[in-house]
Image (cartoon, rainbow, N blue to C red; front, top):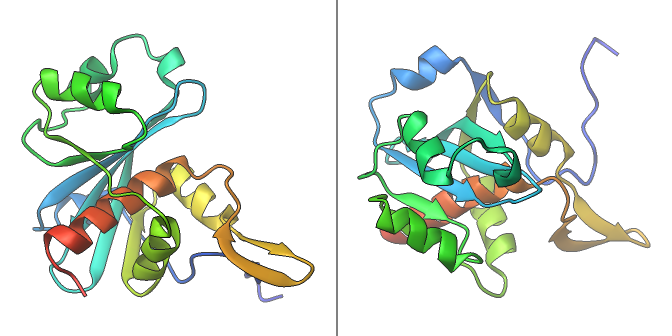
Length: 184
C-alpha cells in the first residue's frame, strides 16, 4: 500500500539511504576500497568514504568475475583509476591475489576475519548511517536481499551466504576502519 515496498522481517540491514554519484564524488572525506575476489562469482570492489563520526558512504566500482575480465585484476583496477596508495582491503582468503596486487604497487591489506567477525561487522555497520550511490545497483540489490538464516522460526544470527560479494567487500573496509581508526 502507499506504493512502498514491504521490508522482509529477517532483512539484515535496514534504513540505508540513497545518494547520487555526484553527491558522493564531492564528499570531502578520505576514501578506502574493499575488494572481494571471485573467479566465477563476481569480484566486487567498493569505494567507501567515512565522515569521521558515524556515517559511511559507498559506491560500487566493480562487479565482475575474474574469469570474464579481459585483463589482469591489477590492470582492471588501474583502468578504473584506483589510486594505488589508498588502502585496498582485500578478502584475506586469497593471499596469492593480495601478493599480486602488492607486487603491482597497490596498498593491498588482508581483511580482518575470524570467528564471529561477520556478525560483529554486521552489528557495527547496523549501528551506523549508511549512504549508497544510486548507481551502485549490485550493492543495493545485495543489501535488499541479504537475510538472516531462520530455521523453525529461530533467527540463527548468521546471514544466508548467498549473493553477498560486494557486501563482504564493504564489511571488510568498515571492519578495517573500525580497528584502524578506533571507531566506536
